[in-house]
Length: 159
Image 1 (tube, rainbow, N blue to C red):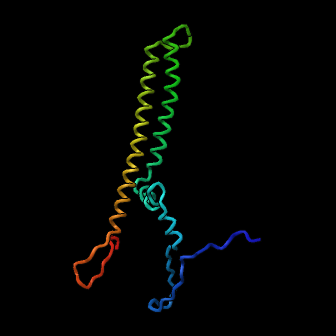
Image 2: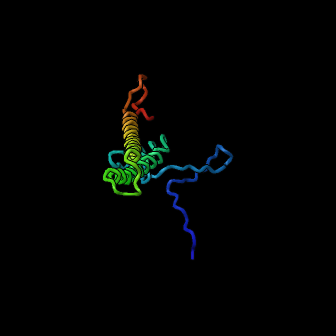
Image 3: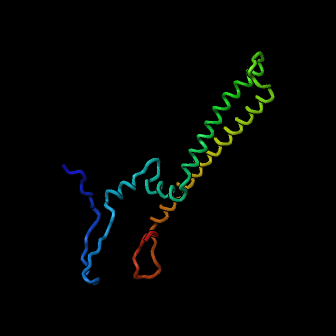
């Protein structure tokens, strides 16, 4: 039985170069299938654009997860502190802190939930703004320009 399979190297070619003392050069190029996969659009943006946005801001997902989890945690604490405040307002419970302390806890947890929720929403908005900027840059790179020299041919800005 064979434990490992040979890797598929569809875009790798071995080229003999006489100019470099008959040494072999390896030329790696991406296949059309890989290029097509990176060009697929998901929610209006290609995989290349999403990857570029992630490279430009590598910790956005970490911050978004931190702010989202913190907002959820503050909402959970708000629920329980609101129950304590209601119990303190009703009265008759021995294990409940005074109403003013319970209201301070409700205010702290409300501020935390609101603040972290706004920070998470801001991270999402900034990420979308970066994706739009990258998308517009890609459209500009595809524009065709004509050089001033008469013998030169038309090219895209990318070239």
